[in-house]
Every structure is written in C-alpha cells, then in structure tokens.
Image (cartoon, rainbow, N blue to C red; front, side):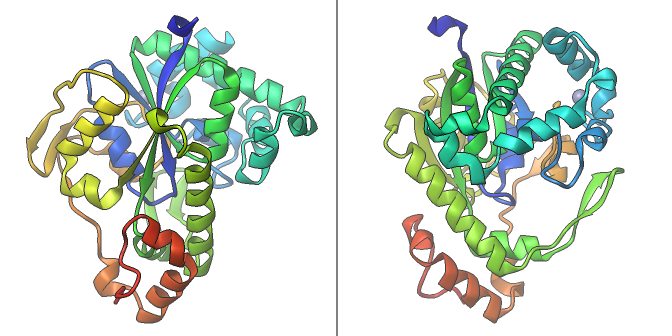
Length: 320
Ligand SMILES: [Zn+2]
C-alpha cells in the first residue's frame, strides 16, 4: 500500500517567501521533480483564469499547453492533451474547495459533505495529476510549492500522498515590502503582479502561517520550519536538513560556491520569474525592506504580526 504512495515535499507558507528558488534548487536533485505551484495549473489565484493559465509559460520556456512534458502528463492522466483540456471547469472546481476559507470544512469529515461533489471531483483530478507526474517524470520525490494549507489538505484526502511539509517563513516586513512593489511577471499573459497594502499582507501572513503551524506542528516527522533568511544564508546546509527530513540519502546539488548554484531548466509552473533562470544563479538575501520601507509601514506590519512574528525568531522590538 505504502509503495503505491507518492512522496511529496510540500512547501507551505506565504507568497513572496522565496518558495520558487527553493523549489528550483530542490528540482536539481537527481530523482526529485519540482512541479512548481501545482494548484496554479488550473488558474493563478484570480490572476489568470483557467483558459489563460494554459497559455502561460512553463518553467522550460514553452507555453504550458505546448510543453512536451505536460502534454505527456495530461494525456496519461486525463486522456486528452492540454490544448483540449477544460481548464475553466478545473479552475471552477478548485475555487469551490481549494481555498483557505474552506480549510475548516476540508478538515472536518461530516462538514466536508457541504463541499461535495466538488471536493470529490477535485481530489480525483489532483490524484490523477500527481500519479501521472510521478510516472512521466520517473522521480522519487515530487516538490510542490503551492504553499496553501488547503492544498496540502486536498493532497491528504487523495490518499496517495506520502506528505512532508516544509514550512517556509520570511520576515513579514520583507513580504509586505515585496507586495508594495509592482513586479514584472516575465510572462506575456501577465504585464505585472498587483501591489497589496501592508495591512492586508500582514493579516494574510498571520492567518496563513498560524494555520500551517497549527495543522502540522504536532507531526514532528512530517513538518519542519525553514526561514527564508536561513535558506539564503546557508543554502547547502538547508538542503541537507531537507534531505534528512524526507529520509533521503544526501545527493549532490550543483552549488558552485556558498552562495551560487547552477540551475538547469525545469517544468515548474507559476511562481517568481526566477524559475526561468538557468546557469549560475547567485543566492542573495533580499532585505531591501530594511533600508527602503517606510518606517510607518514597518511599524504597522510589526504591530499587526506581533506575537506570530516573534514565534519565528524575528526582531519584534527593533524593526527600524
Ligand atoms: Zn515545460
């Protein structure tokens, strides 16, 4: 029974926390395959609806529906190529159950009936997708950087997931500052990512991180916390920790120095434009918020994230 399960390393956390670069590095390990933000295959959280998500770029540079890898995955999973697949219907299914607002219902067996039949159909869709990715990639471990706790719960419900959760946390002031900037998406279907007010980012940061921690912290062998700042400061050591966590032998990652890594193209979906970077990529801590963020915004984020912020060892008393 266990043998039929798919080993999945799930990167949970908030957007703008460095999940794409972590996903990309893990995808370089022999036998590991990074899907990217798997839940965004159907849509991009309102940024791109189902039809346009199929026209966005895969990490390999091809349009998703034309990517040879994803064509094989879809034909294996759904007996239809991506250009004939109904992405709108899949996106609608996702939006009816795979959202943070439905997490309580997803966790509670009797309450889950309120989401049926959408949840059954979406769980089935997810199961077929992952089984097919595993088969076509031939990988031992799939890396999914969807981040949402609801999607991790959907994976649990598939019954096929041997799930390990890496909770990636970044200083909320860094997240908030990043969301204050309009960011190019490097994708012809999206001109720029929208900006978000730091108050909204702060509340999302607290809710999302608290939900992930509450759900998983008692599962010691299935849950680890990794701070973005520690990942960038000690990338190789962080990879050691992750491989040990998923009980895999340590395999070489092409680190060229303490802070640069050689990346090959992957088929990761959605995420930061860093997913298109190949060759030597320098890992640099993005802490521009310390010098460039308005003091009032820093104070606002610090006040709103308060206790949760200090839980992860961030400086509560002296943010300026
Ligand atoms: Zn591709």
